[in-house]
Image 1 (spheres, one colour):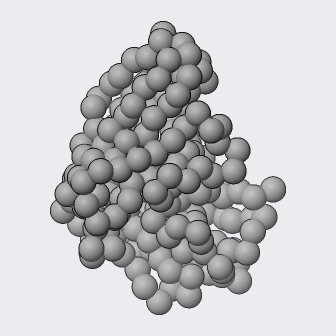
Image 2 (cartoon, rainbow over the protein chains, first blue to last red; image 1 turned 90 degrees about the horizontal axis):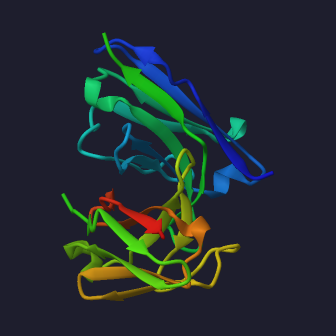
Length: 120
Length: 107
């Protein structure tokens, strides 16, 4: 089955760090650019970061630039998001997603998300 | 940074047609893509590019674009179409942005 499964989310204090993971299965992971999208409780979707197939190019939303780092391990079919200096406003459900090969601006496969709660 | 604006909510009678719009300057240069998100579920891509439906998406969904506005139309809305809908696009720097979202209620 083609799927993405996120993990690593939890309750953390402001200023702390966390590493989110996304395990891919059922498709050739190294052929796809991957990304992270988050959704604060009761709010809309926010694009966070993307990484190209060979990790040669990454991009970040202004809201996380300098604090978050995206990476991947194609041998392990895994995507990661290192989140540092966490703020209350980082509280959200974090989804990993896949860019389409037919249209790289569209995201055709999503995981179910992992929840990050930043609170003291 | 780029912004995409959507109406917060629309309603449609069962079997009727509803159009959801997405407005933003970046849409003059890039297509919008559309996602459906039912309560408690992950987003699902329902439209991409000029007017393309992913496999498994019913043909009652269609897309269009003009100037700085993109639209998603549901022709013959069904109860299962009740969800939040988000547009998304990119800007020239490769940053992606989602619209503010539209809650569709099927009456």
